[in-house]
Image: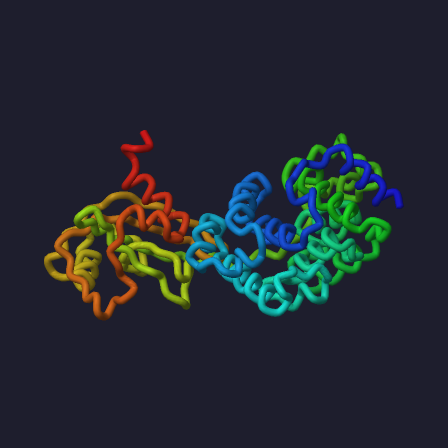
Length: 353
């Protein structure tokens, strides 16, 4: 039990004081776990606080509009997870009388909850003996035991889940799970861990064989797709023209501006680009370059150009997703982070200075 005891002793001395560690409420723990899958603790904490403030109970979450949920989620990416959370809250109210499940097998029945999240919630809320295996745990186990099996393959996941469950300290699984996850986040970090002060360094395979920067092994993902979006900003009478993005593409049901997607990046004066713009917005369309922006998603790199547009023509009967809104209303609508940042800079720059 040396490995487990060392981790627990380290954790009791070094753990961070985080709000979800002061409760065994499954709903609160669920909120924290899903949010922290998206980002580091420092960035995730404000989101957790906002969600809990706006939705103190699962019923409050279930009764909220999707737009409000996505607005609070704005900036975390993977917006389908925000929608899955909303759907899960509604299922809990409908099928579980508003009481969030705290057992592993019941949790797996809920939308958007996989093995990791089910294990975490059940362990931290009910003490169920389930090993929690996240990126931090993969890293600690791979380095300590010297396993080069790629962690993002079915074989690797099976190997590490088996190892994690074999090592689980069943007398207090919640404490042990928190300890190994925190150890991976704070001590056995992805880059430049301070192995000299690590309590496990004498028996750590990676440290003793010069493999700390090699393990864990991950198979490289497919090359990211490049896309080129050109946004056109139309302003009239203190209102801006926006578009609700539809299903079947990135940022589903978030709001951005009228756009033209091209197969490559064009200079604004390029004749081919001018022809494409006029074919969409009319022959009298007049546009002026504002700025460029690059936005990186998991599988796509989005190259964005913003233009101010005048003398345009829109067929609103066909493009029902277009709508005029005030800036106040736009602030209330969920937007992709790159659009939100542009709005702040373009429309509120004077007020921010």
